[in-house]
Image (cartoon, rainbow, N blue to C red):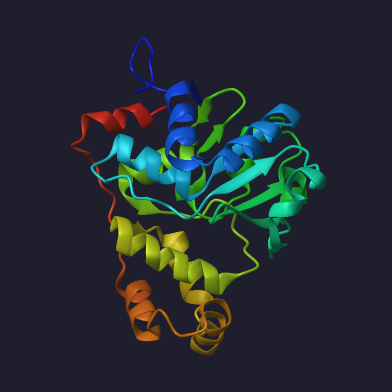
Length: 254
């Protein structure tokens, strides 16, 4: 649990315990540990996505910590020789899919993030930049491995307090993936859609494209089109004025 005079976060807090957790429960083979520590010695290494989201949700809410397969690694500079033997393929988002001892990871340089050139040039913190380059508000909190440091974004705090899924970066090259992920988050967390998110999903809902995307990605129709449509159309945003958990004031940083 973070420390502070008012038991509240600013934008960042030091958490060496999570670093220890990573190497005991996530990067728990010798190959994984060697690679991550090699990267740490070469460049700044940031974690975000499912691994950080699920940890924070389990810390600040009643959700349990699930084993996640969604581990995204972003680095300031990437030496391909360091990861070469683990590369499975290039990803659609400009990085690499790695397989290490049976575990899968996505890794890329920050500057290769697909919308990097559209970020506000006045932002000079890589932590803040990365949090602004994602689509879902759930995925905007970052763990800086080198510094054992969390960055808790305003967007993440609002999502947890209000139990709502919102948009951070308004454009997305893969709307079908966004619709499916939003539905998966709803099934997992039972959070509602913000009006902006609902409008985006409605305007990009194409049954044929959704079916084709699933066939291409999964080899079959994994999510029923009618269920996806019903989820979007019946999901109504209601502002939640009070949150019962005392821990959630930790996220009230602004």
